[in-house]
Length: 127
Image: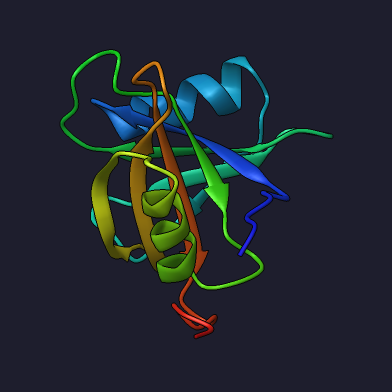
């Protein structure tokens, strides 16, 4: 299986989601939407012609975000992760539940964190 991302999101872990919402919506006019299903809510918006921007209020170490998350739209996330492992890629977080789907994290050759996300309406494996 050859994985070729068709879209990506830039994900930030922030200390205060309300403060982030005010800044990005009122100062930068991004029009982020509140997404329910996790406490607190998260924010999401698409830059014109660019990637989604996603903000979660989570404890995090500065430098862990922003993170680039590739959407798995063809194939199952389990199959993509297995393929990455077969190519010697270091998996940091195995496939696990994420809001509305599944995610996994891995490292590039220089140790930069990257991630995968797949919607829950798609099968985790095609095998």
